[in-house]
Length: 217
Image 1: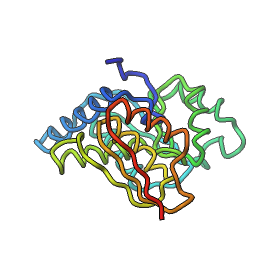
Image 2: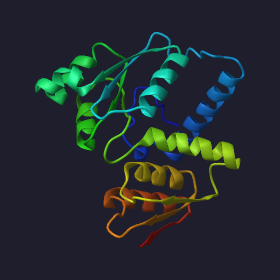
Image 3: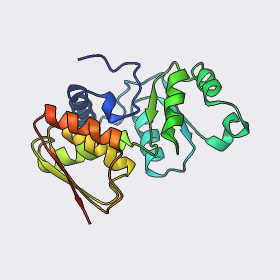
């Protein structure tokens, strides 16, 4: 398996099935150790994560900040308005500057293209903490919960009821088929998944011998 060190996580599509399984097993191991009394697992000691919030957050911000501290690292959280971005500094210049100060950045943005530009010019790992296209960390958390509740994360049929063009749906769809699950979407007409993401999911489903179906009302 290719090392995950130094890599961005912009989309679930950035991960192979093997890498996604590795992340799930690592998360499960850390969680077991934490609830076994190991309150700090210092694998990120001496590392600092910058969180950038163009879009407000409760759960994502808290979970990232707590996780970073439980892994022995530090975290800085800034809103878009607190940065020079609000005064017209380009994303490219911001990416170059913050790369000199911190070890990684997690950004919650409105436009997926802004995240791609940030990753293009940053020399540190960039994590998608939500964009209008995807929410990969949410999908990974969902798959971990499914594993805990069902006893496995593959060989299942997973259903999504709601907005089929939603960012969470996109990431969960990709994660599910990468792990070998059938996927069913029940949505209203006109709310189909993004065509590019759906094409990637269909290709992944074919490789893993699983199916995707959409039911429209």
